[in-house]
Structure formats: C-alpha cells, structure tokens
Image (cartoon, rainbow, N blue to C red; front, side):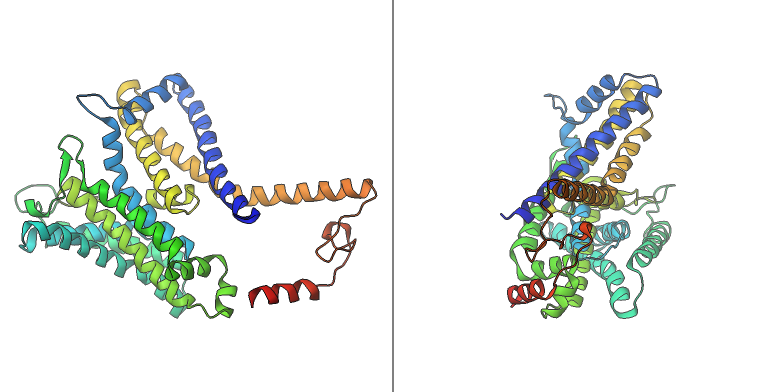
Amino acid sequence: MNDIDFARLTQRTVVPVAAVILALLVGGVLVAIAGVSPLDALVAVGQSAFTCTPQFCNFAVVLTTAAPLILTALGAVMVLRAGLFSIGQEGQYGLGAIAAVFVGFAIPMPDGLHAVVALLASAVVGAAWGALPAIFRIFFGANELIVSIILNSVAMLTLSFLINYPLRDSGGTASYTPLVDEGARLVSFDPGTKIGVNLLIAFAMVAVVWIYMAKTPWGYEQRMAGDAPIFSRYTGLRTRIAVIRAASLGGALAGLGGGVQALGMNYRVIDGFMDGTGFNGLTAAILGGTTVIGGSLAAILFAGITVGAVNGLQILLGVPREIGSALLALMILFVSIQGPVLKQLELLLAKRRGMAALKAGNPPKGPTGSPGDDPDTGGGSDSSAPLADATTEVK
C-alpha cells in the first residue's frame, strides 16, 4: 500500500469515526436539555440495541432492521463510486418491494422457487428504475439529482395507487396488499425477531459487491468513471456504459432491499411502506466513506440507533425518539463538511511549512527540484518535465 492509498484509507476511516463521536456529543447535549443524563441515555440505547438475553435478543432486531439498509447502502455505494449522484434508492426500494409481493401472492410457484423468483423480480424492477437517472444524464444532459428526486415522488405515488386500487386486499379497511404465499416468504430462524435468510442475503451481497468493485474489470471501469473521468475517457474506458451499468446494479441492490423487507419481515406492502429506508441507506453509504464495508457497518449503526432510540430513549426514559434521527442527521452533516475542512487544513499547513522554510533560509523546492516552484513563494516552474513524466507513466 503506497502513501496515497494509506492517506485515503485513513481519511475514510478517521473522518466517519470523528463524525460519530461529534454527533454523540451534540446528542448528549440534546438529551441533557430534555432533563435526562446523557450517560443514562447512552446506556439505555446500548442495552436496547446491542444486547441479548435468553428470552429475547435486541441485537437480532437490529440486524433484521439492518438487512434492507445494508442493501440500499450498497446500491448507493455503487452509483456514488461511479460519479453519479443519484438519490433514487427510496423509489427503487419501494418498487422492488411491490414487485416481490406481486409475484409472491399472484403467481403460484413451487415453494423452493417462489421466493427466488420474487427477489429476482424486485431486483429487475429496481435496476430498471435505477438506470433512468443515468440515461437522462448521459443522453439528455439532465441533472441526475433532480431526475432521481422526481422519480422518488413518481415511485411513491405509483406505489400508493397500486396498494389502494388494483392490488388492495379487500379483507381490511386499511390499504395494503394481500399476504404473500408461505412458499414466497424468506425463512426465519427466530420468529420473534424474524432474523434469517434476509440477513444472509445482505451479508452475501456485501461480499459479492466488494469482489465486483475491487477485483473485476467492470468494477474498475466504474471506479475510474467516478474517480478520474477525464483519464478514463482518454484511455478508452467505456465510461458511459460503466455509469449506466453502475446505476442499474445499484438500483437492483436497492430493489432487492425492498424485496427482502417485504418477504422477510412484513409479508405484504402497506400504504406508507416507503419510510425513508432508501434515504437512510444513502446516508449510511456516505457515512461509510462510499466503501462497501464502511457503508455496511454504518447501516448496522443506523439500525442500532433507530432501534435504541425507540426502545431505549422513548420507552424507558421518555425521551422523544426523534433525537435518534437528529443523531443520524448530525453524523451526515459532520461527514459532509470534512472535504472543505481538510482542504483548508492542508493549505494552512502548507503555508506554515513554507514560512518556516523561508525563515530557516531554505526555500521549499517544487517538483523540478529548484527553489521557487512552491506556489506560496510566488515562483514559477517549468511544467514540461512533470507533464512528460506523467505521460510516460500513463503509457
């Protein structure tokens, strides 16, 4: 591992940890304002989310909640690393769920095959919906952020229409679909927490996506399309295809998250199913440094805070659970400002090093090895030599 890779890994590790610590400190202040000891609140959240007893395992509930979050986070990592800022994971999640449920109750199949086909349907629908922002950006020049926001609204309205009218279960007063067949439900190891195949699918996808992104030519194309688009274009990489492929695969993962939630937890889709899981997956991916492992761990942390805020803060201590949502938002806020803060810090340190060198009578040297190449000293440099070296390295 070279110095650049080590610095990048350090930044992607230290910054999220610092963001979590700062968010917890601010959350402690909010809890104190509510009249509760921050230490008691932290203990309550920890006990309600990350402990197990012979009677009931709270951490199993966290892992069950984290399963769809991990999948939507992986979908977000896929598109963000390709340089596509699409936030359409929420819509892909909702439409993937309705596709899985429709196959689960409307199309009879053998038990061993039914759940597999239903999950495949959720992935296909999510992939088709996820590809749209990339297509609009590449072929029509549209902003993928705006397109994905609109598509989320369209997905929410479409889901509500389907649940209230053609797919509504006639047996109840509330709006929801019929229950999926028994053979279409994901196997559960614990009926109380419903932890089971849903979590295995999420962990399996973590391994698959990591191998795909790190070890395959397609993954390399996608990473280069996001990290170095100009370099990719001039070296012949198929950046357009890579971006569309990343958007489709990211949509498939988010859609699969909806299918896992519907077939492993709810067994149907209710009106209001799109509860922010897709957005939370996106924020987990950002908090995890847009890495596969980091985004997955952040998704588990998000699930733990969510479960702990309900069972610990609200039920045990009487503190509003919205403080948990505030903690998640603060984490993302602190991560989002790390880029400008680090850039300003690097400039400040570079200026201090330059001033120290000048006072010591040893002007800093630039890439050509001559004094005055440092931009802070006002000197110039011959750019032809570095350019020739870079050209030689590319060849």
